[in-house]
Length: 104
Image 1: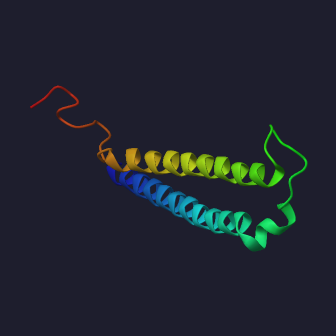
Image 2: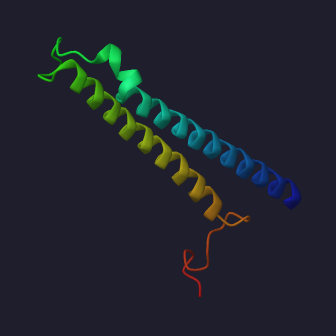
């Protein structure tokens, strides 16, 4: 019975590690796309003044849009890694640490 629980936890840890790996890879790809979108080759179609967006010239709004997206991507990455760390810190029996139970 305990072996089944242990195996299930190992599988959960593998899934969490795989999820973190995919999110990290997606973050790397996002930032490569970000660099291309705000530098010369990707910026050419968006390098104009009008229309104004929230009072910003279009090219400046384009860069601000990517900065906001990068912030959201980093929040998502942090959330995923935090979930992964919390899952790894729990002991296999699920009871918590001795300090958490008030023990010595």
